[in-house]
Length: 269
Image (cartoon, rainbow, N blue to C red; front, side, top):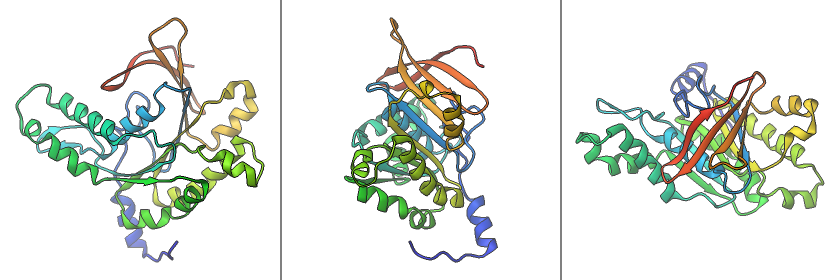
């Protein structure tokens, strides 16, 4: 990591130039995400963890407007650390195309004729880093400062998944998976807090509710939003449980070729 020297004026200009992630995913984050928030996505296989992350990335890197037509993106840059290698760039492009097409809604506009140009230009806002072992992953996390310094538009750090190399690291230093994640988040937040970058990561499924309230309170001290995707018995719907320190929400959703579609929400508490 190179040394960082900047004046107070330069710091203020850098922070003010940061794109807002207010409209990133309105169903999940109606108040928007604050800079340096941490969001966890967990779930069983085939519940849409990587798909949801891809959908969020699509909204992040698309523009808010194209000419006078509103697309509803965040016009930000993002870093995507790919450790599970389930992410498909073709699916991301498909999701971006669906968002732009929904904006057009069948009308013949300038957007409609330039959809692929818009998408190709926006892909320059996404920086994909492939990691294949725990050493590469650790080195990548320690180099985040350099990447944030090199591109002040970066507003989102996405990791799929944060637990990919847990068992490799466990061979060297026996840890629970919870303490392993806390250790990584401490390192990540050293960089993201300084540069006002939101972190969203996926992890393997774990039933945290069986661990008791004390554990959940400790857990939520490190994570601002906990999203758990799960199947619903005897139903074609799946359920998203979203928890913060203030509220627990349950939202039914389905998975289609257009991505995750939010359906109905159960009562809050």
